[in-house]
Image (cartoon, rainbow, N blue to C red; front, side):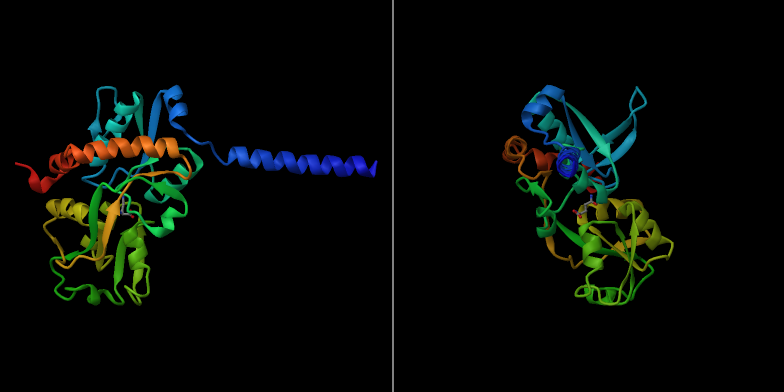
Length: 266
Ligand code: GLN
């Protein structure tokens, strides 16, 4: 009797483990995506010019536009499938890719060693820098060294958040985290924060809309954007790399950048 109970307990344990592994997520291989007929992209659509919304289409669905959306459409086209944008908090994108809830993370996402522990990255398709934005009325903050002890607004989970939260770069700073850089900019405009740290292209879009904000000339460290794929999903990684390499060699990324950058309009 004791033995049977022990065996039952061991069996139950094994079943639980199996359930945990299978509920932990699936691997969206190219074959699976083609069978499904749709590829999904996790993003945060408040990051112009890479991804933002532009009203609704004739069916009432939100229209997602931007550089990353164009890239995503090309990936879908090369695979011969439909595409679906999954708009979420930036901080949730890596988890969505890890668990297979989304096939790709395309979000102007900078490659970092920390993120490489959780996802695989494709080839890099854009070089960026983070910059500091302050109110025009602020004459006190003029270099990165002036941020010491200041209130810094960032978007949660971004490289700006990592920078602002680092005692080495921003000693004694208070970090205010927002769901988007647009909200972080509002905090700077209304004086809730002294400055924000944000990617240079998005800073340009925010400045184009807000003449009471200015950007410090000196950029912070260089970063590069790539697409996040579930770890070990090599078929998908290779497929996305081949589309990206094609777009890069055809000069398409540069065209998308021009198309969606306010500064280049007109
Ligand atoms: N490039 C930044 C990062 O990867 C910000 C990206 C974003 O907010 N969409 O953290």
